[in-house]
Image (cartoon, rainbow, N blue to C red; front, side, top):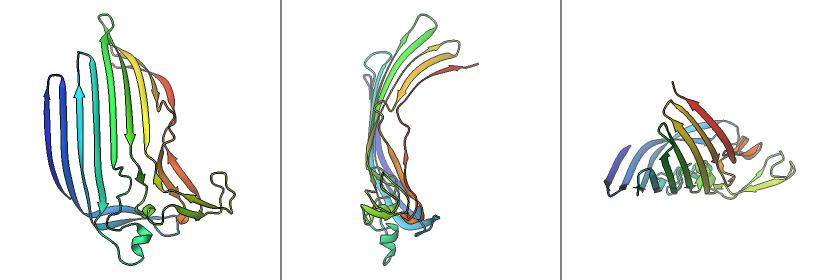
Length: 234
């Protein structure tokens, strides 16, 4: 891989700003593919591919203890190779198709505030919002999509002998996390948190056995989780 990057970093007046544009020229990219209609996977070396994009990060601290951060990226990640004949449709390795599991757009925003509690402890509150764009699990998911499977097993409330049509483009998602806690000088800390506050149903990938002729299922993210943690450093 040849990586070309041009960036800038600056700070002052409570601000920090970092940005970069990049282009990666990739040869012999390893990609995992379904092995036809069986349950195995194969690793295939794609002759040519590339990624190109921009990423930036902005931070601001107006007063001591108060911090805000905003970061994002836009990435084009595509194959530059087309396999001959029916192999392109079977594998999804076609010039212009997206590389698997790479969202085009991501954005994250966070804020926190810390303050002293007496002489021996500091308290904090923090919040973050993350957006992750749409993705494909495998390159072939871009071919003949939406896809209809006849799988012989119940799925999504449908009987086993029914056909199931699935849009294989995984939806974008947003995560909201909150936390608050207190840290003592003696190494003790206590925190409460709420992760995935809006209980977003995050679809991380789509999996199938025997090329979709058996089990169908999504790998999903963690649902809303609320808890408390206590730590002690010695």
